[in-house]
Amino acid sequence: MKKVFDIQRKFRFTVYVLLAVSLVLIGFSSFVFIRSLQLVERSRQKIYVLDNGKSLLLALRADISENRPAEARDHIKRFHELFFTMEPDKQYIENNTREALFLADGSAMKQYRSYKENNVYNQVIASDISMTLETDSVHVDFSAYPYQFRYFGKQRIVRKSNITIRRLETTGQLRNISRTDNNPHGFLIENWLITDNKDLETQKRKSF
Image 1 (cartoon, helix red, strand yellow):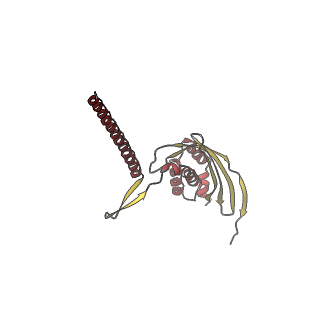
Image 2 (tube, rainbow, N blue to C red):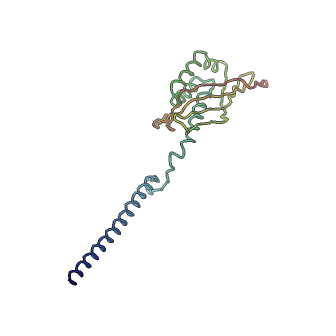
Image 3 (tube, one colour):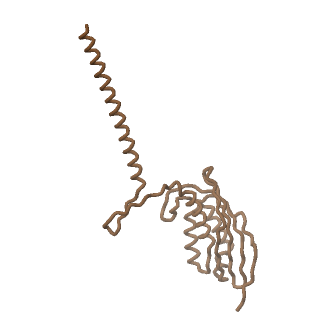
């Protein structure tokens, strides 16, 4: 009877040892698996750049999501600067406008056609007018999608006889799209509308 009891006790002891070893192996395997996943994720956040084909330089890649608000504001600023910066040069105006229209939907094309119908571009060319834009602020609401924005800036319109400062305020929405060479930020301006474009002041230019 005692011999049978010893066999049972040794069997239980063996089972406990095997169970403990199994738990240790499972724990170690889980640790290795988790560490491997972390290493893979860290490797994805790195970019290896060839330096003249000889050495590799390691560059850490910033998380894209962290830069989206800054990219959104820059996208809006860039669009307005392209659309409203004009010189008495037809090719210059067309190039700027073409670049701007890649950044927005049909609402920008509608405004472009309105300017053409009202001979805005022809007047700029014929009267040697220069128009530049200074951005005051860009506000984007990221709490809801598509993102609502408001743009505030001032136009400086230089004519032969005077300089006019004009307020520019617009509204619209931003939608995420794929990045392209013509739209590197991956945003599209939608439902764009000019809400205020009144003259603030006009200064006479000195004649020499």
